[in-house]
Every structure is written in C-alpha cells, then in structure tokens.
Length: 381
Ligand code: ADP
Ligand code: MG
Image (cartoon, rainbow, N blue to C red; front, side, top):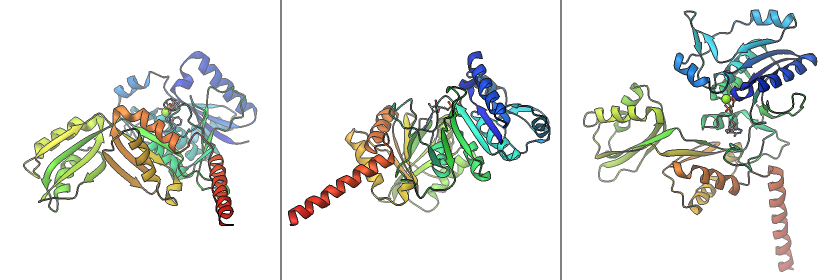
C-alpha cells in the first residue's frame, strides 16, 4: 500500500466518457489498497479562459493537514490542479501546465511514493509523436535529460514540475489516461541515477520550440561593455534572453544577435530602438520572428565526440541553414527557419536512429566493427 498522487491533464478529463474512465482507474488503485490524491486540470479548452482571468502565481506553501485527515479516513482526495490561493486569500492559477507542478508539489508535501502524470500519450517519447510517428517511447529518462527536454520545448511535462521533482527527488512517471483503467503499463519513469547496466543511448531525444524570435544588431561598436549596453535595458524591461551570439569584431565593429520569447519580441524591439544611439550604436537592427529552435538532448554527449558535426551535416543534407548554435554538456541547439521545423526534426530522428532501441543500434554497430576486424585479418593473412 502506497500513497500515490495522480495528475490528469486537460484531454484526460475532456468529456464525460474520459472522466468516467479516470474514475475507474482511480477506483482500481483505491481497491488495490493505495491512498490516492488526484489532481485534475481544467477541461481542455478551458485553460485559455482561466489564464485570462488571473495572473501567474507560484507555490509557496501547501496546507496538507486537511488532505491527510481525509486520506486517513479512507477518502480519495481530489484537487483542482491549476488553482491556488494568494497571500491575500484570492484564488489564482498556476499558469499553463500548472497542474503538473501541483501534482509534484503535493507529492513532495505528502511524502508520496510516486507522482503519476496521466496524459494523452503513454510516456515520454524520443520526440513529439505528433511530429514524428516513428518516435519511440522511453522506459526511463534521466532527470537531467527530462529537464533539458522540457526547457527546450517538449511540452509533455511543464518545466517547473520537473525542477520541483528534482529538488525533492520525487519519483515521477508519465502514463496514458487513454489506456484501459486496469492496464499495468509502466509508462516512462524519470530517474535520478544513470543506470550503469543499461546500454545508454547517446541521444535520448529531440526537443523543439517555435516560440522564439531573433534580433540582430549589425555593425555595433566592438568595445568593452557593449553587450551590457544592449542587454542591460532588455533585462531591465523584464525580457528573458535565451541564445546570444557575438561575432568576431572586424575594423572596430561586430554583429550581435540574441533570441527572446516571441510574445516579448515587439517589446524587445521597442526597447532597442529607444536605446539605440544612446547606450550603443548599430548600423541596423534586423529581426525575425519566423524562427524555431531544434535541440538534441542526451547525457551520452558528455562522452562522445562528433555529435554536433553529425547534426550539422544532417541538416545541411536537407539544405537547412543554421542561423545560431548553442551547446551545453548534454544538449546541442540550433536556430533555423521555422518552415523547416518538421523536416529538421524528422531528419535528425532518422540520422540518429532514435526509432530504434539503443541496444539494437549498439549491437549492429558492434557487428559491423567485428566484420571489419575479420576483413583486416583475412587480408593481412
Ligand atoms: P496534458 O493536457 O495531459 O497536460 P499536454 O498536451 O500538456 O497534455 O502534453 C501531452 C502532449 O505533449 C502530447 O500529446 C504530445 O503531443 C506532446 N509532446 C511533446 N513532446 C513530447 C515527447 N517528447 N514525448 C511525448 N509527448 C510529447
Ligand atoms: Mg500538460
């Protein structure tokens, strides 16, 4: 018997049939002897309306005492996931995807043994299965990879929920609410340790994000402080900057580019045109809000060279131009024209053989190298 938090997303409670199916699953876990806290999202379609009503709030505290009392009395506790109460007692929402975070936060506050996120896919895939039908479900993914995937645009889990899970080491699992309520499918488990015995894939997944826009300042003075002169006012306007690229200077001038969230793009342009000629000078400001970011994610990148080169070649083979590049220990991201998003994701998925299990790829590559050894010996002897 365990205490389990189950979160059901918008499409999982999108109709009375869906709600009935959720109820059957909840009843089954209860029958099996578990204590259950069920977090439900707003019905699909409702989130936009709710978001327009109130501002984004954060979780400061959860009052678990009433929940504990109900659980001890054998009740199933149902919580409206998106909603919270602010310091003045007003009801607020936690923003889009906020119910994922509510689920994890409740699991942490109650010391639950697991937080199960039920959605319309049966786990975390190598990439969004709506874009790549060959995408493969992962049995497990490391917390670090999941955090990168979420922050780079995979909307299967809200990033705050993954951060929260990591902070409190919550066992988190993604499953389908569309499976039979009696199903024993185990979905995708987010793990906190790299499994040494498992044949770890070099690349675990591909994330993408259409919500960005690029701003380039051409011919800015190449002098100390110019990056601050440009980005200082942008930060002061509360605008988040993602990728930043500054070119090598030539004859005292350089080009400076960065990306912002698409919804803040106009505001960023206004700030820059206001500051231009004051804090910095620029020959021209060029902007583009038809870009996207595509990222490869995998902890295997730490120990393997040539991943970025292979990625760039795969994109070049499809005639896709790379506008910006950024890398970290476990990810490589590129900014490209938005119209190539699907093509790029499918091409990378194929080239990195993400449709096949890491074991299959590994075994085949090993066979090939054995064949080479054999040929060498044969020719040598
Ligand atoms: P919910 O309403 O249950 O919170 P979401 O729409 O927020 O559901 O998240 C589920 C969706 O996330 C899937 O339908 C899928 O299209 C999308 N998605 C994006 N990337 C991935 C991925 N790597 N694996 C699985 N689903 C993904
Ligand atoms: Mg969601």
